[in-house]
Length: 162
Image (tube, rainbow, N blue to C red; front, top):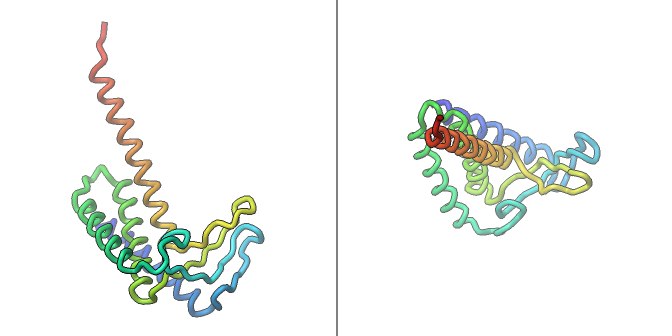
């Protein structure tokens, strides 16, 4: 199915880029791509987003397995008209599994995308994190547009004509 292929591509790109960082960069090394905006910085994270819950591996394993099972169930139940929702789920599945692979085999997540937004140093992230974030955003967009369509349909059904 297309959404599993998307997840697989996310995992491949995520793991390949992490391998490059681990193989060719020293921990803490930073390479400027766009000065004061974007850097490739070798960083490790033993927690969740923004370094929360450091070292809580069993919690991450349990949560990730539950999330992956839930995503697979949703993908199996998708209707052909739910393409945007399927893309969101595929991105989320790939992102969740990409970081899960790191936690299982490295006991830490490799992060490397370091951005500055108006002098704010945004937490360093990776391809899996980006896929998860984009997937969640697409899911919200899908849900919002579906709700608007449903509301429009019910408003139209309830209106009376003179």
